[in-house]
Image 1 (tube, rainbow, N blue to C red):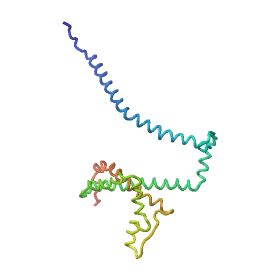
Image 2 (cartoon, rainbow, N blue to C red):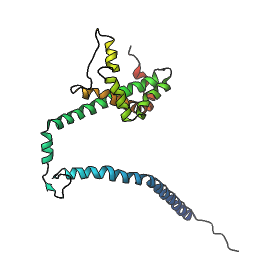
Image 3 (cartoon, rainbow, N blue to C red):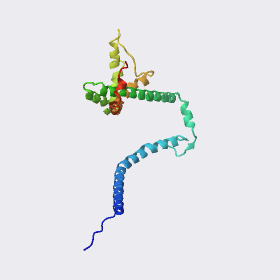
Image 4 (cartoon, helix red, strand yellow):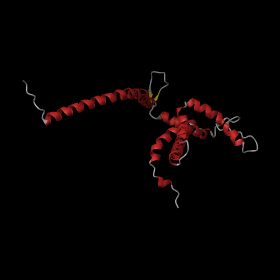
Length: 213
């Protein structure tokens, strides 16, 4: 009969290390099978066009011709001379700063209110706040178009309740349109930011919210 040789500690440790290494490799391959397709699509449809656009911006090219004339940063210099481009950049800064401040202040306030102030039906209000996040941009635009309508809009009609005559104001006019875009933008994404704040608001020290004596 063949005698069974007991495994030495070194052999057991080597076999265990090999088994763990195989399991780890399979796990990494499993994770990579999900990450690689998404990463490939991101590189092909986002990263490559971005760098391709930066590269082409350094040339004088009509978009259809086969000749490329290198001009360096002349396109950017001409762009900054255009008043419309400068105005667009300014409007972008207004939207970014306004949305960030609005998101942070309002979402933190509502997250703390829904978790610490013992509001009845807090779960219902969380759902209501999150509904705009699942709406498409088109739906949000149509809704707020009726809100801002100068003749039949909800906003002007509401203000008319407190005035002697009918209030008519073009909120989407040239002067105020950039500021009128802030409420829809904040409203459409506020629910997600509130959800992000909820776990933090649950562990927020309660004594910070007490009124000082």
